[in-house]
Length: 325
Image 1 (cartoon, rainbow, N blue to C red):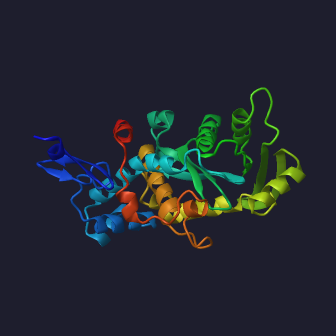
Image 2: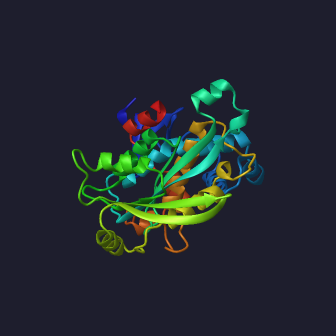
Image 3: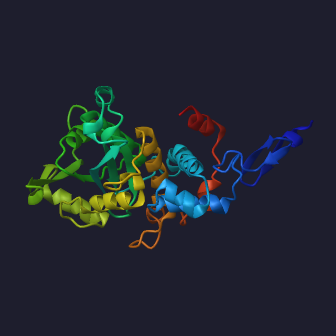
């Protein structure tokens, strides 16, 4: 059998010979899937717009296990796709950080002693980082509210930023961010161009009583100049990342308050967030921007369609990484 019979090269990349014929889906999300591409795209759209797995299965005429398998499969491939587009290329002037409270499988008072020690179910936090100008969702990770997790989030954020890019950071009153930021931008001393501010909200009887704005790194003049150059308002705030958290709650059924659609494992919730990050940045057009966040930040030259996401071909080493993960 000749080489051409074993391997055919199409415009979109190499094609593997499967079962006696060449598969032009090899390396893409659609590989070995029998459903039409349109059905898959409509199903993923429904899930990413807030419908639960069962409701999506009923509306699209697809088995609920199949819907979940597609969504998790996209979540496994999404980090590779997003890294290919954005890693080391994001240039932003400001970043807002926040955490979103959620539950996995059950509430804390229903946990067994072993489950409480392992910490994989019960109360968890979704850590988010966004660019308030282009509305980019830079990081979305699940983990406990600890210093180690804050360092992981800031490290992931550093991987996204272009060389020499040091944005002005703002967050809530969690001091773990201060430790993580100063550890990544400074060795013996903190980088002179690092700016960091906090919005500390004080509650009384579950109602907001007082808000304190404090600038921990940098001067007020440097802060205002940096945010003015970035193209956003100069006041210390986390309003846009908090609005993004609301979008996440509305778009992912597992994050909705008092829901029956809780994620069963921490891994499943992380994969759903991975998939939604790609959808939010590449496919979903932002109402204010009139385009996608990735297009606004000039990471792509157009708003992607589901077809482009589903037919994006991974390289062999990327496929091995996805399979190994």
